[in-house]
Image 1 (tube, rainbow, N blue to C red):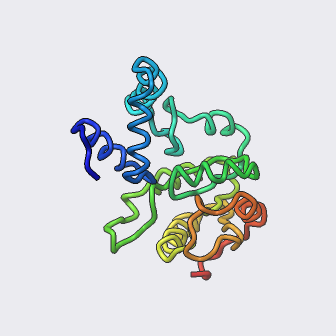
Image 2 (tube, rainbow, N blue to C red; image 1 turned 90 degrees about the vertical axis):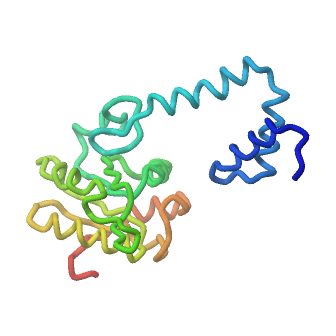
Image 3 (cartoon, rainbow, N blue to C red; image 1 turned 180 degrees about the vertical axis):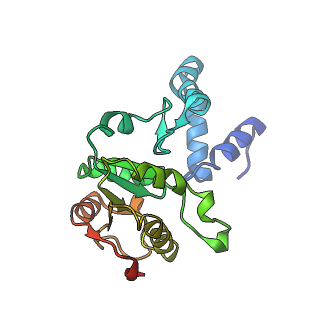
Amino acid sequence: MSYSSRLLEESVDALSQLPGIGKKSALRISLFLIRHEKEAILQDFLHPIQEMISKIKFCNTCHNLSDEDECSICLSRKNKAETICVVESIRDVMAIEETGQYKGLYHVLGGVISPLDGIAPEDLNIDDLIQRVQHPDIKEVIMAVSPTIEGETTIYYISKKLKESDVLVSLLARGISFGGELEYADELTLGRSIATRTPYTLSQL
């Protein structure tokens, strides 16, 4: 596409780097911003983004996003929760929270074990999880990891690490298709998968 303005072209190129934003969408956004009052743009769009980039943190406990050292979920539930739901990503926490079916704690691994991609157990937040499970209040660890080959390997590895503990390790019911990702599952299916989770044994792999 030919642009009469270098500045417009650079704006379109920058915005199109965002996930789900193509060149046409980036152009529409850029033209909208041009027509919008400059003060409103700074206050309504740029300021919140700058605040997020400069101030957002990762929870010291579960590695979810947080405004403080500990996220609001950990702060509100840690004294009454008996379960830790283990997920790959922050998006998975959001997907599960949307179901309204789970009221326990979370632990974000930051990915799954994948030797082909150079991701080893020590690259993930696994050691923190093992330490958290030692708390006497924790009775169950729910492995809400996408059922891919890499996900199954990660579940097996963590389960072996927890073998000597007294906690129950459980899996989501297989409403989630093999190879599927949690963030793309519909709320009803994901909610039922949590509610009807099943115990996991090391012989399942």
